[in-house]
Length: 580
Image: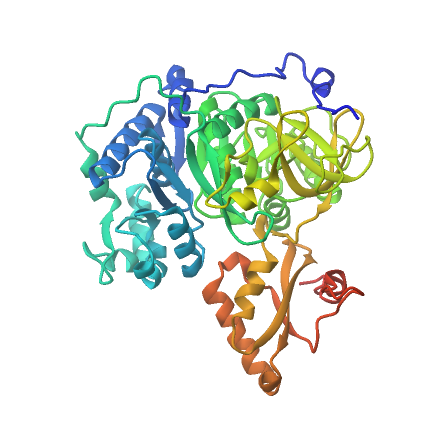
């Protein structure tokens, strides 16, 4: 059967949008961003609680930060962890590391101590830029890692003076008081301002003439791969730069000076690839927000009147439920994108109606992607929505539907595994060729295809429809939860014989994790005591967003006729109260 590599929908829905782009093979992502923003260098690039910076100032900060990293001994190819929420320091560090050819290892700051240890160890990071709230967790595991220095940042460091005073008073400056030049466990700590002082006036190494940087790894992000255990995803300069160019074409409405509400986190492919890199390459102003709160988000809407917002479905649900924007004119909103989780038809209708009633001509546009291709690679056209569809592929990105775990392409309208190929597909998993080979496969057409593990359908016009996940994956408020990983933590508890974690529907979070637990025979008479202890065990060893929503002790896990755990039976049994 002939491969259906879809490009024709571009002609139908876009006037003058390019289906093929010329990607910068020789440029790093920092160089690409710097070149793209030369013409509007005095525009504001970010606003953080009222503290603004122009593109000129951002580039100056990046140069200083890059020199500071060099003064610590960081060099090309080294991996440096960034464990930060959305703050200017996180953005500056990311580009500064890229400026000197180092690799940014992005870590969720809410990760448990053991998870941080894993991410730092597997990436062989010797340096980490970390928010001060993470210091207690770093101290727990520092002796088991190769870390030698921590650059400590407070979310207040870049706030305006009056807000910084208020924040420090509110937190009683607990975290900064605990930072010493030499930490008690041997972790060398330096505050951000002291670190940046090292780079002032310092020389940066010269660039390598003729060096093609496109295939160099720029960042490592984490996802579950096919096994459900956290995998480091190696993403290149070309991956990010291609995404920025594709995103600009697909959105078809971005312009220099546009204001983007950057809610998605910098350690997430959606946040880093779209809200940061794409936005900055286009010349937008990022409104940086280190954490999401519906009321605060609504205040930012009223203050900044953002033109663009990109977030997960839960974000839009929260904004609608909060009532914070009732009666407010949203005519400034021109681009509303949802990704990271499936957007139900019902929620899309509610958001579209809300936007219309509040003066905006925008409609929420659903995207689809994986961290293995940075983030989105398919998006609803600007003027071409089809109910239930996740849109059409990005430029130079090929989609096809195959018989699961094969190369056999299926006819239009028939359900199978979604596979894709294009310039944003990852280089591979970190230190795991076996897992890489499971998902990156060269087909008979000569192209390398990413096997997503997701089921879907494609119609004859090239619109793609997501159906369900082949992998045991739970999407909760946009975060990927991996049941096998959560089970491994629960099963490590001495009172547990076995466990099974499933995703059950939730009216707000879309899905939540519920843990079914079979206790050891000698522990069953201490059920309540053990449940409390197991919960504490999970809270210590899992990131907060991965904590099971509910725990239930059962006598045995249900099985299929062939002896496998009957996940669907547990999902039906574990459905939470719809009023929760």
